[in-house]
Length: 464
Image (cartoon, rainbow, N blue to C red; front, side, top):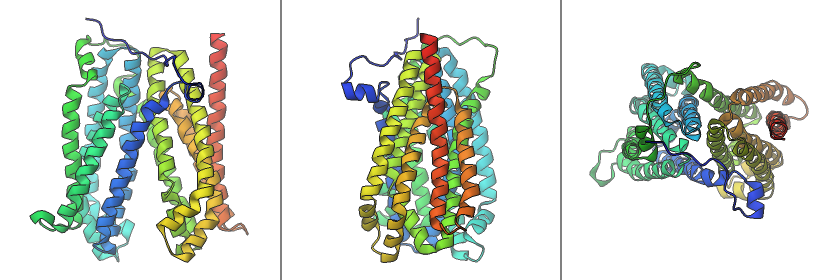
């Protein structure tokens, strides 16, 4: 029995504008990813609203746990992202026999990583809470320990969901993970008040209830996702294909890590740079910090779209790379560049023109609003550059040039880390921090645009 082939060349029938802007049809793959990402953001906001009713210590405890999960996201992205890329290459090449060893390797890596992280965090959950929240905050520390006692073992479910989702995305199916994310968040929205406040006869569990609601919603969703996976086209194609013969070169474990580590590094460096800049802004008072948090949180709908387009480009570029389809690879590069530039322009203008309205809708405090209005012009420039380089990064991850992405991100972040503390000491003040952030994002965007243009020229020379 022959295995089905994957159509990797972009469709020929397209509208003139959309066909030029997105020749690889990235948006068809990206929009479900966007809904998946935004549904998680909305659910987390709803959880914070419920927890806020329990008081400051409870809110601090859950916020600390959410920050910790963001750090752990870099680990799961390195594994699940690498798995998606390697599987997508095999799907693009119609080498379904290669899927089994890759999935076995991904499972082993996930199992080891999960076991190590869960054991270490469970043992150190109280010292970690004291370091983050301060040993004087006894109530918040105690509540953090209660939350982490349930949430840390639940990391296994969190990592497992990302791994199973990668099997669907490798086939270009981003709608199933989207539906599963919506299902999980719907369960969480219902379970949160029931377990936190003891509605419908349930025990009132407070922050422990919030952790139970989160883990339970993810566990139910993982069970449904696994059921769908067992009946997915990927499994049918994999079952029909003969076992792939062993070939010289790196094994599947090394392939996954080589493909995924740049993604994990990129995420971790970006997050660390963002946390460091908050520390710099904090020198200018709580109003400036609150303003910074307000204006950046209102941008999530813009940045999540860029990350969704990046994920779509990663999948399509990896499939094209596996199929050795230079036409689709070039199309994915063109789509990423054009969509990145278009979205950056729209995003920058949206922040500049509508940022004030967004701030007014979030807060009514005059001091915070005044501080936010002063930051918005600089933020519009920064966000335009950030949206462009995030959207562009997918073609490097999927096309096998992840090291270039990780290097550009690290260099840009290093510039920001060095310049921000120095510039804020000059008469520029807080504006110096924004200039450092703009230099960071501008460096990354310039490097990626130059590399993309160089790759495009190389492709033209080969096909000429």
